[in-house]
Length: 436
Image (cartoon, rainbow, N blue to C red):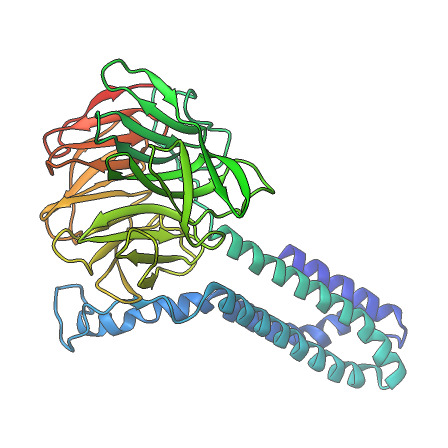
């Protein structure tokens, strides 16, 4: 408000300086109505996406207005279609509203200037100042809109759980999150395969020895190292599939797309979408490969191990999906966790918000065995596909990755500093199996 009042006061002072024996009070009162369209379009631009997306919730609320489990009109299970408008389209619409509002304000100010000054020459001169002020208002509004769009793509800095001390050996906490990108188990010998923002690490479960895995990737006649920004998923044997970024700039495209290694991460090759895909998680279920692509802001699904993708489900607009899980019984049912929300999709681009956990990490190894670990270290289970949750334990740190085994009660968890925990009783108790 202070900035707006300052701009307006400056415009009034400028308009008074052109002459015509006008008092500052008369000009302030005379031009104040020109701020109305500006205020109106600010409100419209600010709440545009809220109205478009949250407004769809009226359809479900109409069937169950009191949250009693009713389905009066058969629409209680309807979700939100986040593909209605993209972030770019929303931004252009917001810009259009802002510009239109300021043009309307100039028209109103010019009309009033003709009445106040009664001389066209003085009225026009006064409007030079008002034009400058409107340009200032427009610039401020566009900057605020661009900052809002940028901020929505970043992870919100919710407080991390209090722990005695975090190790910096494998993770660089001076960088922006994510700190841990992936945790896998080598099917050949049981070693942990941990990827963090410091690199790709092989961890011997027996000796606790840590060995860096230094990989290279070649494409389009260029070669670079890879490992610092890398996601990996085991395909069995010595095969890994993954995604990420090259370690250095100006060699390969920023986004490596879907990549594959047949020697446990020593060498990599691109198999699809070089330069146009950045997969943040990969899950193998129902003879499909599911992944969330940060470039598209969509779940992508492949039946040929990432060589092509047959389906794209656009996830909630302007939200960074930090984890997801696929129903082991229903290939179409997906849970996706944003920073402070949990969504469910039964197909297509419609997503229904289920709850608001902070920083949820998910694992769904078997029917009735759905796990959620929140940023504050609390661990929950659900027996009804994420509709309700029961807290079962807590861990001394910030959970980052949950990794399944053949036993749905046997899981591993990577904390933010690379510490690895193990449970064999369905997340009721956890034991440290590796500490960096």
